[in-house]
Length: 85
Image 1 (spheres, rainbow, N blue to C red):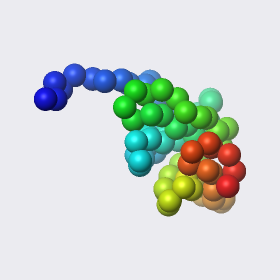
Image 2 (cartoon, rainbow, N blue to C red):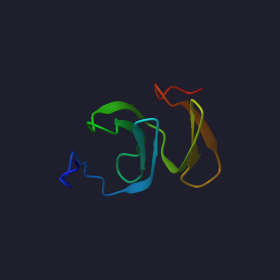
Image 3 (spheres, helix red, strand yellow):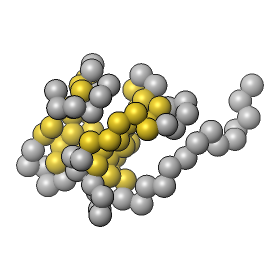
């Protein structure tokens, strides 16, 4: 039975976008330390971090698409590793 208690949390003052798929939470951040990161949805443990600064996220199969903050570029990352696909 669900307790309603918080399982985990992160502090993210400059979060732009958040998506969840296949047990992974993807977060894009801007600001002083721009990056995209993947977190385990159950534990909140970080799986990987990429230095790409993005504003929008889209997941299609095993690829995480990230649009740049200024919308001039789209990056394709391996959703499992964060490496450029």
